[in-house]
Image 1 (tube, one colour):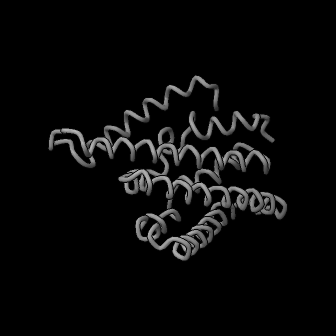
Image 2 (spheres, one colour):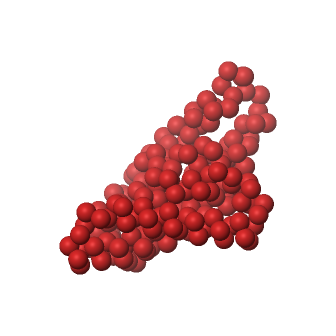
Image 3 (cartoon, one colour):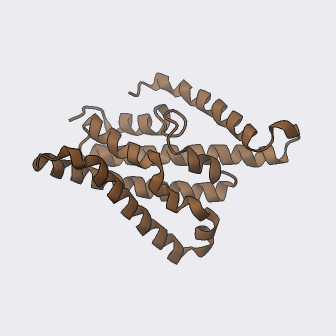
Length: 194
């Protein structure tokens, strides 16, 4: 069992060890869905929901696999749970908001292959979090993921209006801004997160 407080876990997952800007996990939606703030916010909410469900499921699966002495099934079990959760989210979004479903496009089913989700399940297991710590870790990771998406989309919307040389417009400029954001988030390492 890990002795970190819940606030430390949340701040560490959202700012200090941000999955996108510190670990470079989940870069696909970070670059692909960050054109508009509205779409980024909804994608962040979908990823946070999937992280939360996957975290609780991963905790239960880990406990079960340890009980039956089969920890070698951990990775494949996590992948199955994540894929199932994403299918659930996809069906819900398609039913409740067809416009959002169309706006997210291919990136919604790609949450299945989002390495940030699998990374969350593996990290929480390796850190030895209990159930409550795992939930807080998932919420912090989701908040950090959403924050990174909103920040880059806000900057991209402003840069679309700026007079930028043609040579660096588009993907090049987005990657430069993402690198600067990553450097900025390195400043949070002084908060004491692990």
